[in-house]
Image 1 (cartoon, rainbow, N blue to C red):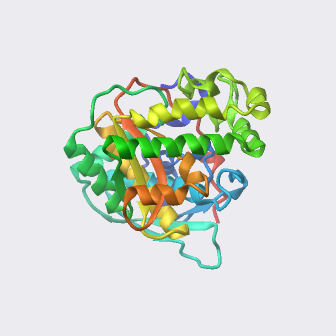
Image 2 (cartoon, helix red, strand yellow):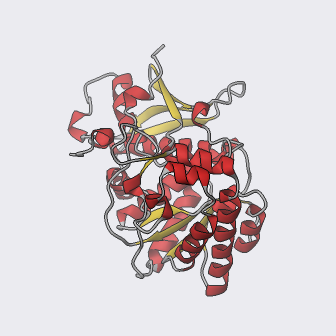
Length: 345
């Protein structure tokens, strides 16, 4: 059980699954796994509506990051993560899923419609993904030097491909240094923008906050400037040089440094990227591998093409992540299903 009441959403128990209930009852329960998905700044920008045998996923654009994510690209990626979690839960409880992305062209906020399909036994791989859901965290702590096994790297690439995305491992000192330099430059440019700092500070919370979203101080790396500088300091001062130096070293020396991308760009691709991200993160966590994000060069318009060039392939980079083995971390707060559930119709 979680001791932090703001983390009570993580206390989901399989025994409570309403096996004799209606499809709507089952879907409402399965959403308890969907809300554990990762999201940018832990904004949790999703809403759900259960309609009989279907559950619809909506974008909550009131939670947009207007400076960091002006096109809602990462917002839709976050929603794609929640969608994959829901699908994994459906598989675990013995059904195929029927999922339609952007089912109503005239309603861009309706991102997906999902229903439980025919009964089907989950595969061992699907079960491993499900077991990883309550153990997945964004881990900002320092990782050990242990390298990722080659077989796991290949499986993570396949996990992304299963959801229509690609995953590029940045190997070799020259490539790593180049991407690390882009991360550092992204930090400098973002922190020089006061509006960026105001937006970031709004989602950073002290450990005693009652907020069920955002990033608590305890989730930061102990050596991170964000863990010692309060929101007032962040809003007031450009800490970009310090952040750039720290994140450059983290990127350059992470056991695994990857870029996740898609062939196209746009809402469908972003939802696919989110599902690929969630599948990849769960597959990594099944082997005790943690992850955190270094998206600065993707979020900085002038640097994103340079990330694509670094990968040496067509398409659009969507995320930069580091992977590795490290200490356990506590979950971040989550809104409960009841808080993100629209009235039934």
